[in-house]
Length: 397
Image (cartoon, rainbow, N blue to C red; front, side, top):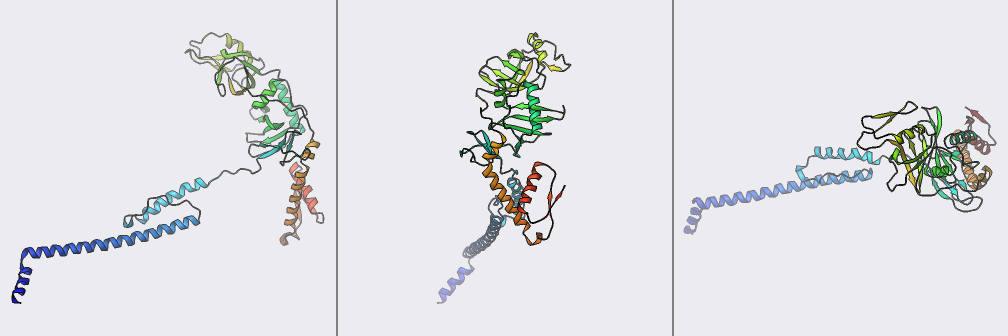
């Protein structure tokens, strides 16, 4: 027994044995410290994950886009940096959610059999379904008034020497512009654009590709014939050397009708027709940089590097065909074709007016109709009289 006790004491007193025990003790302490730190890291990461999951759920409820930052890494991810990244994600979200407002009714229908415009899909005369005719925004389409028809006739005759539309039904669709600007709809397609030019204080007419093809069959002026070529012409400027014929009544800035072999279309003139022959016979310019026309306007001439004078810019040409329909129905036929659709619209409007007037807060109030004398206020007055026969109506301007 005494020998065993002495051995134990020697082991405790001896240096190497003490170092080993100390080293083992420190190792055990280090491992225990690592375990506590890992536990604390895990707790911190779990807490941050809970916060992130709560923010994700709140964003889903608010229909905002999810957080696109990197996932949290325990105590190394600070709340300040996370909030900063979140604010960055919210800024473009507003831009993405922004939508341009557009009208829902951006189309009408066209009965190809009766050659009539329709506000509904089915024609009230033949019963067939009309083709969809999309309108440019804001899709405010109306019948051409007698005055606007006179303006159209005057512009077509002064520019092209003809008016192939005759007595056809013409619709005008209001489109954006500096002043009064309308698309001209005929026979189910866009014939051109009629606009009021503030600089000239007068109207001007720009044909569409279909309108130009129809005008070419009847026009007596503003025609340009190009040499046949295989080059792509749409949007290109044409030199005088590429032109076969150029009408003398053309002025700089006029819309012109173009023929190039089997291609037809329209474009814009850079020069006056009176200057074309001079440009056609003009030798290659060496030192001259510009040419003065007979009207006093200056026409740009490119340098002597072999380039030619540009006289015309082509808007659009192609080899398609276009023609007007032989049917010319009148306004009475158009009303008959849309009668059922108009009745449905009228009933819905009358029920809406009666529903509003019958509310408790409006029963004892006077009824006023805003009236300016135009077509819209006239329809509102007619609907108000049809729906409120037992109540007095007053007009306010």
